[in-house]
Length: 116
Image (tube, rainbow, N blue to C red; front, side, top):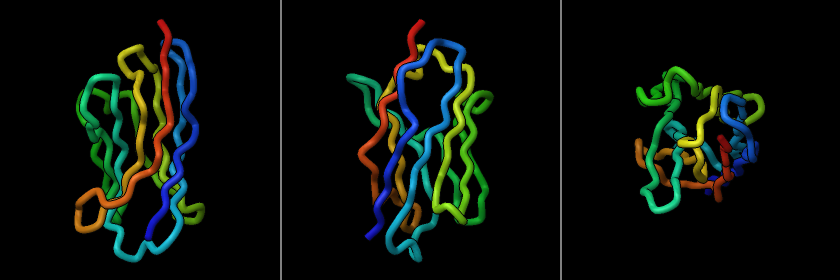
């Protein structure tokens, strides 16, 4: 089993930054990567940033100029740096751990609210 715990969300104003953390614990031998997802009210949960076991990253075009995914293996933590936040970024943000490129494990999420 793998446990994920997100933190770092909050209420910010447009243009400000946040860094989300996802602390990973448990048996991670089969984990092939991690992803950040977000879900706004009334919308589906969508992936927008992925980091694989070899530290290669993918961030969707709509946020890649503002969001960065990274990891610190010494701290068992995956990060999401979010800059120039906008009201459209308001959502619950989730961390997921992939097994065979399938999101097998999930955290409970952290809320990000951006006011205009």
